[in-house]
Length: 116
Length: 116
Ligand SMILES: [Ca+2]
Ligand SMILES: [Ca+2]
Image (cartoon, rainbow over all chains, first blue to last red; front, side, top):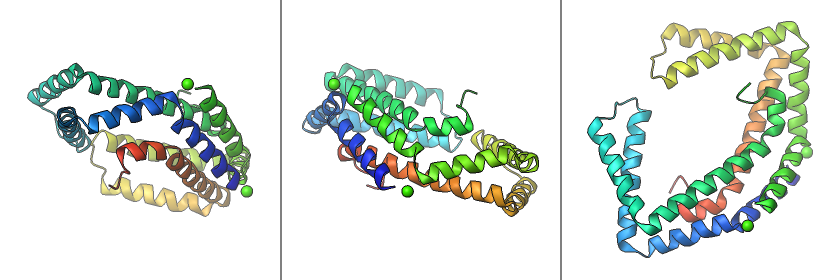
Protein backbone atom coordinates (compact mmCIF):
# COMPACT_ATOMS: atom_id res chain seq x y z
CA UNK A 1 0.00 0.00 0.00
CA UNK A 2 2.98 2.36 0.57
CA UNK A 3 3.92 2.28 -3.12
CA UNK A 4 0.29 2.85 -4.08
CA UNK A 5 0.03 5.84 -1.76
CA UNK A 6 3.27 7.32 -3.13
CA UNK A 7 2.02 6.98 -6.68
CA UNK A 8 -1.37 8.44 -5.77
CA UNK A 9 0.40 11.40 -4.14
CA UNK A 10 2.49 11.94 -7.28
CA UNK A 11 -0.63 11.85 -9.42
CA UNK A 12 -2.34 14.30 -7.08
CA UNK A 13 0.57 16.74 -7.45
CA UNK A 14 0.50 16.38 -11.24
CA UNK A 15 -3.21 17.19 -11.14
CA UNK A 16 -2.68 20.18 -8.83
CA UNK A 17 0.06 21.48 -11.14
CA UNK A 18 -1.86 20.99 -14.39
CA UNK A 19 -2.90 24.05 -16.41
CA UNK A 20 -6.48 22.86 -16.25
CA UNK A 21 -6.58 22.70 -12.46
CA UNK A 22 -4.80 26.03 -12.06
CA UNK A 23 -7.27 27.63 -14.45
CA UNK A 24 -10.20 26.24 -12.44
CA UNK A 25 -8.63 27.45 -9.21
CA UNK A 26 -8.06 30.95 -10.59
CA UNK A 27 -11.62 31.25 -11.94
CA UNK A 28 -13.04 30.04 -8.64
CA UNK A 29 -11.03 32.69 -6.74
CA UNK A 30 -12.15 35.42 -9.11
CA UNK A 31 -15.78 34.44 -8.60
CA UNK A 32 -15.35 34.32 -4.82
CA UNK A 33 -14.23 37.95 -4.99
CA UNK A 34 -17.09 39.01 -7.29
CA UNK A 35 -20.21 39.39 -5.16
CA UNK A 36 -22.68 39.28 -8.05
CA UNK A 37 -21.05 36.34 -9.82
CA UNK A 38 -20.86 34.46 -6.53
CA UNK A 39 -24.52 35.03 -5.77
CA UNK A 40 -25.61 34.00 -9.29
CA UNK A 41 -23.56 30.82 -9.12
CA UNK A 42 -24.68 29.95 -5.58
CA UNK A 43 -28.33 30.34 -6.58
CA UNK A 44 -27.83 28.20 -9.64
CA UNK A 45 -26.01 25.47 -7.70
CA UNK A 46 -28.70 25.51 -5.01
CA UNK A 47 -31.43 25.02 -7.60
CA UNK A 48 -29.49 22.22 -9.30
CA UNK A 49 -29.01 20.51 -5.94
CA UNK A 50 -32.71 20.72 -5.13
CA UNK A 51 -33.71 19.22 -8.48
CA UNK A 52 -31.07 16.50 -8.12
CA UNK A 53 -32.36 15.59 -4.67
CA UNK A 54 -35.91 15.40 -6.01
CA UNK A 55 -34.79 13.08 -8.80
CA UNK A 56 -32.91 10.88 -6.35
CA UNK A 57 -36.03 10.64 -4.20
CA UNK A 58 -38.02 9.68 -7.29
CA UNK A 59 -40.05 12.94 -7.16
CA UNK A 60 -41.26 14.05 -10.59
CA UNK A 61 -39.83 17.41 -11.69
CA UNK A 62 -42.53 19.73 -12.98
CA UNK A 63 -42.34 21.39 -16.39
CA UNK A 64 -42.13 24.74 -14.60
CA UNK A 65 -39.13 23.63 -12.53
CA UNK A 66 -37.36 22.25 -15.61
CA UNK A 67 -38.00 25.56 -17.41
CA UNK A 68 -36.74 27.55 -14.43
CA UNK A 69 -33.54 25.47 -14.32
CA UNK A 70 -33.00 25.94 -18.05
CA UNK A 71 -33.53 29.70 -17.74
CA UNK A 72 -31.12 29.97 -14.81
CA UNK A 73 -28.58 27.94 -16.76
CA UNK A 74 -28.86 30.30 -19.75
CA UNK A 75 -28.57 33.27 -17.39
CA UNK A 76 -25.37 32.07 -15.67
CA UNK A 77 -23.92 31.13 -19.06
CA UNK A 78 -24.13 34.83 -20.02
CA UNK A 79 -21.70 35.64 -17.22
CA UNK A 80 -18.17 35.43 -18.58
CA UNK A 81 -16.47 34.18 -15.38
CA UNK A 82 -19.17 31.63 -14.61
CA UNK A 83 -19.29 30.22 -18.12
CA UNK A 84 -15.49 29.93 -18.08
CA UNK A 85 -15.65 28.22 -14.66
CA UNK A 86 -18.21 25.72 -15.94
CA UNK A 87 -16.05 25.01 -18.97
CA UNK A 88 -13.02 24.49 -16.71
CA UNK A 89 -15.06 22.17 -14.46
CA UNK A 90 -16.12 20.20 -17.51
CA UNK A 91 -12.47 19.86 -18.59
CA UNK A 92 -11.38 18.71 -15.13
CA UNK A 93 -14.20 16.23 -15.03
CA UNK A 94 -13.04 14.74 -18.37
CA UNK A 95 -9.46 14.55 -17.06
CA UNK A 96 -10.52 12.83 -13.84
CA UNK A 97 -12.69 10.45 -15.84
CA UNK A 98 -9.69 9.60 -18.05
CA UNK A 99 -7.49 9.09 -14.98
CA UNK A 100 -10.05 6.77 -13.39
CA UNK A 101 -10.31 4.82 -16.62
CA UNK A 102 -6.54 4.26 -16.63
CA UNK A 103 -6.32 3.33 -12.95
CA UNK A 104 -9.15 0.81 -13.09
CA UNK A 105 -7.83 -0.98 -16.20
CA UNK A 106 -6.48 -3.86 -14.06
CA UNK A 107 -10.00 -4.42 -12.70
CA UNK A 108 -11.40 -4.42 -16.23
CA UNK A 109 -9.03 -7.25 -17.05
CA UNK A 110 -10.77 -9.26 -14.33
CA UNK A 111 -14.38 -8.17 -14.74
CA UNK A 112 -14.51 -6.97 -18.35
CA UNK A 113 -15.27 -3.39 -19.34
CA UNK A 114 -18.73 -1.96 -18.54
CA UNK A 115 -19.66 -2.16 -22.24
CA UNK A 116 -18.95 -5.89 -22.48
CA UNK B 1 -1.93 16.13 -19.67
CA UNK B 2 1.15 14.02 -20.61
CA UNK B 3 2.53 14.20 -17.07
CA UNK B 4 -0.89 13.34 -15.66
CA UNK B 5 -1.19 10.33 -17.94
CA UNK B 6 2.31 9.12 -17.01
CA UNK B 7 1.48 9.39 -13.32
CA UNK B 8 -1.86 7.64 -13.81
CA UNK B 9 -0.08 4.82 -15.66
CA UNK B 10 2.45 4.47 -12.82
CA UNK B 11 -0.38 4.32 -10.29
CA UNK B 12 -2.17 1.73 -12.42
CA UNK B 13 0.95 -0.45 -12.44
CA UNK B 14 1.35 -0.09 -8.66
CA UNK B 15 -2.28 -1.20 -8.28
CA UNK B 16 -1.81 -4.15 -10.66
CA UNK B 17 1.31 -5.21 -8.74
CA UNK B 18 -0.21 -4.86 -5.26
CA UNK B 19 -0.72 -7.98 -3.14
CA UNK B 20 -4.38 -7.07 -2.83
CA UNK B 21 -4.98 -6.94 -6.58
CA UNK B 22 -3.01 -10.13 -7.22
CA UNK B 23 -5.01 -11.90 -4.55
CA UNK B 24 -8.29 -10.78 -6.16
CA UNK B 25 -7.05 -11.87 -9.56
CA UNK B 26 -6.04 -15.29 -8.27
CA UNK B 27 -9.35 -15.88 -6.48
CA UNK B 28 -11.27 -14.81 -9.57
CA UNK B 29 -9.31 -17.29 -11.73
CA UNK B 30 -9.89 -20.09 -9.24
CA UNK B 31 -13.63 -19.43 -9.28
CA UNK B 32 -13.71 -19.29 -13.09
CA UNK B 33 -12.29 -22.82 -13.06
CA UNK B 34 -14.73 -24.09 -10.43
CA UNK B 35 -18.06 -24.75 -12.16
CA UNK B 36 -20.15 -24.82 -8.97
CA UNK B 37 -18.57 -21.75 -7.41
CA UNK B 38 -18.92 -19.86 -10.68
CA UNK B 39 -22.61 -20.75 -10.98
CA UNK B 40 -23.30 -19.76 -7.35
CA UNK B 41 -21.55 -16.44 -7.77
CA UNK B 42 -23.18 -15.68 -11.13
CA UNK B 43 -26.63 -16.37 -9.67
CA UNK B 44 -25.92 -14.15 -6.69
CA UNK B 45 -24.59 -11.31 -8.84
CA UNK B 46 -27.59 -11.60 -11.17
CA UNK B 47 -30.00 -11.32 -8.24
CA UNK B 48 -28.08 -8.35 -6.81
CA UNK B 49 -28.16 -6.61 -10.19
CA UNK B 50 -31.90 -7.13 -10.53
CA UNK B 51 -32.58 -5.68 -7.08
CA UNK B 52 -30.22 -2.76 -7.76
CA UNK B 53 -32.02 -1.97 -11.03
CA UNK B 54 -35.37 -2.04 -9.24
CA UNK B 55 -34.09 0.36 -6.60
CA UNK B 56 -32.71 2.69 -9.25
CA UNK B 57 -36.08 2.68 -11.00
CA UNK B 58 -37.75 3.48 -7.66
CA UNK B 59 -39.52 0.10 -7.55
CA UNK B 60 -40.19 -1.09 -3.99
CA UNK B 61 -38.37 -4.33 -3.13
CA UNK B 62 -40.68 -6.86 -1.50
CA UNK B 63 -39.93 -8.46 1.85
CA UNK B 64 -39.70 -11.81 0.04
CA UNK B 65 -37.08 -10.48 -2.39
CA UNK B 66 -35.05 -8.96 0.44
CA UNK B 67 -35.17 -12.28 2.30
CA UNK B 68 -34.16 -14.19 -0.83
CA UNK B 69 -31.18 -11.88 -1.33
CA UNK B 70 -30.14 -12.27 2.30
CA UNK B 71 -30.39 -16.09 2.04
CA UNK B 72 -28.37 -16.16 -1.17
CA UNK B 73 -25.77 -13.93 0.46
CA UNK B 74 -25.48 -16.27 3.45
CA UNK B 75 -25.26 -19.22 1.05
CA UNK B 76 -22.41 -17.81 -1.05
CA UNK B 77 -20.61 -16.72 2.13
CA UNK B 78 -20.40 -20.42 3.08
CA UNK B 79 -18.30 -21.05 -0.01
CA UNK B 80 -14.67 -20.54 0.89
CA UNK B 81 -13.47 -19.20 -2.47
CA UNK B 82 -16.44 -16.88 -2.88
CA UNK B 83 -16.23 -15.44 0.62
CA UNK B 84 -12.50 -14.85 0.09
CA UNK B 85 -13.23 -13.18 -3.25
CA UNK B 86 -15.80 -10.88 -1.66
CA UNK B 87 -13.34 -9.99 1.07
CA UNK B 88 -10.67 -9.23 -1.55
CA UNK B 89 -13.17 -7.10 -3.51
CA UNK B 90 -13.98 -5.19 -0.34
CA UNK B 91 -10.26 -4.56 0.27
CA UNK B 92 -9.72 -3.35 -3.30
CA UNK B 93 -12.72 -1.11 -3.03
CA UNK B 94 -11.28 0.50 0.13
CA UNK B 95 -7.92 0.96 -1.62
CA UNK B 96 -9.51 2.58 -4.67
CA UNK B 97 -11.59 4.79 -2.38
CA UNK B 98 -8.42 5.88 -0.57
CA UNK B 99 -6.68 6.55 -3.90
CA UNK B 100 -9.59 8.65 -5.15
CA UNK B 101 -9.61 10.59 -1.89
CA UNK B 102 -5.92 11.45 -2.36
CA UNK B 103 -6.25 12.36 -6.03
CA UNK B 104 -9.23 14.65 -5.53
CA UNK B 105 -7.68 16.56 -2.59
CA UNK B 106 -6.84 19.53 -4.86
CA UNK B 107 -10.54 19.80 -5.77
CA UNK B 108 -11.48 19.71 -2.10
CA UNK B 109 -9.27 22.73 -1.57
CA UNK B 110 -11.49 24.57 -4.03
CA UNK B 111 -14.92 23.21 -3.18
CA UNK B 112 -14.48 22.01 0.40
CA UNK B 113 -14.83 18.41 1.49
CA UNK B 114 -18.24 16.70 1.12
CA UNK B 115 -18.70 16.89 4.91
CA UNK B 116 -18.30 20.67 5.02
CA1 LIG C 1 -0.28 21.47 -19.77
CA1 LIG D 1 2.15 -5.14 -0.11
